[in-house]
Amino acid sequence: MANSSNKRILITGAAGFLGSHLCDRFIAEGYQVVAMDNLITGDLRNIEHLFKLKEFEFYHHDVSKFVHVAGDLDYILHFASPASPIDYLKIPIQTLKVGSLGTHNLLGLAKAKGARILVASTSEVYGDPTVHPQTEEYHGNVNTIGPRGVYDEAKRFQEAITMAYHRYHGLETRIIRIFNTYGPRMRLNDGRVLPAFIGQALRGEDLTVFGDGSQTRSFCYVDDLVEGIHRLLLSDYAEPVNIGNPDEITISQFAEEIIALTGTKQKVIYRPLPVDDPMQRQPDITKARSILGWEPKVGRAQGLKITYEYFKSLSSDELHKKEHNTFEGYIRK
Image 1 (cartoon, rainbow, N blue to C red):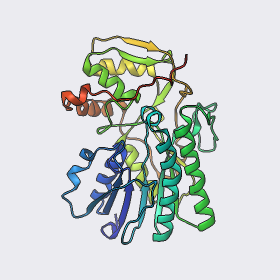
Image 2: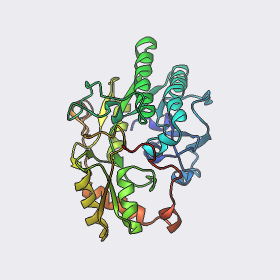
Image 3: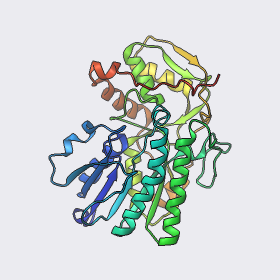
């Protein structure tokens, strides 16, 4: 990238799954990277390989509080937020605050620095969709007071305040709506379906499907997502863009793929569906293709193999670690 060595970028949520991969990408592009994370769900091990680099600096800070970064900033990537149901059920207030107060603070910082800011939104803004596949023009079907509402509405507010800053202050803003993403550095027990299935297979447990397994998801490998983020940041497009892999699969079919990949002899068991769990997830990526020239390159078979090898490399303690929170109170009765 031309003149990237002169550019300085702040990445929030930098010790998380996506944030750490973004740190790697922008270091590789020659940027000066300022990483920020309060470590409530992030893990410093994801970025410890970067601490020795002079181009990298880390701030242990909660962006829901006032954010100060000395010196110039050219770009901000706001990826600080819990991102799985097991997290936002456990820390609902923090989830709402990072999407509202945190976004407000970072928009203010972008305005003060004259920086372009990209905020990480989510396919969850579509809720349990009545339109399929989901286009950016679809306004969603969200239960504002359900258990998932703390995440869904935090992200919807995030989009609204970002566009307000763009329209009122002329701030350079970008909004990405991220669909299910996977790859190395995911937390094995964070409650999302892919690490849950692989973790259960590695521990010799039955694979748990919530509902009847007919609900669908579309999984995008992390390298593809990072490429989409990079292209959107450097584009001239201010409105939301879906980034995800439109290759849709049912959860039951996905469970069978994991069984075949891992060679587990365990069976699939079924439990009640969580409240407001979306029945369909498939991005319409027409805008990403036409505006960014982007589409996913890594097929699910290739990406799953890489991800499985990562999870297999984890220690026995990590493999058997259980999250303190469960889906209790979130399951349909």
